[in-house]
Image (cartoon, rainbow, N blue to C red; front, side):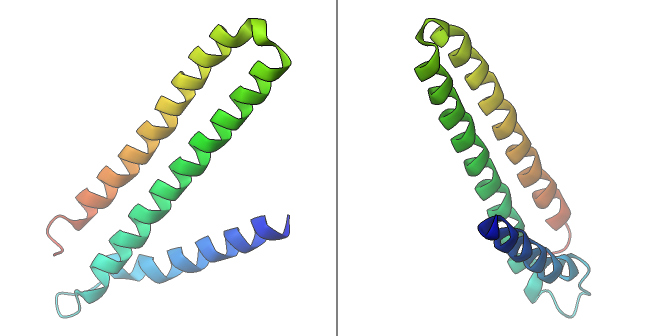
Amino acid sequence: MNFACRLLAAAVVLLAVSTPAFAADDASKGGIGIGAGVGAGLAIIGAGIGIGLIGWSALAGIARQPEQAGKIQVNMIVMAALVEGAAIIALLVICFALVGKI
């Protein structure tokens, strides 16, 4: 629980630091790239954690019920595709937010 609280606090701090970068004026465009990099990094890290948890849960389920391995594997692939799709959408939102600002 302590690690989860620290991770949440770090994410809040990074978001607080990167958010003003998108609201920068023309005179100060230096923070836009940093904000985009932090946002993209958080999206990829979140997707990696999500896919890792999906794989871990699927392997635990297959270990408990080997006869259901086919159904579990299909569901695992579908959920991994959904998580990866959410990460790609987050990256597209970041790219579209940068259009015209750099």
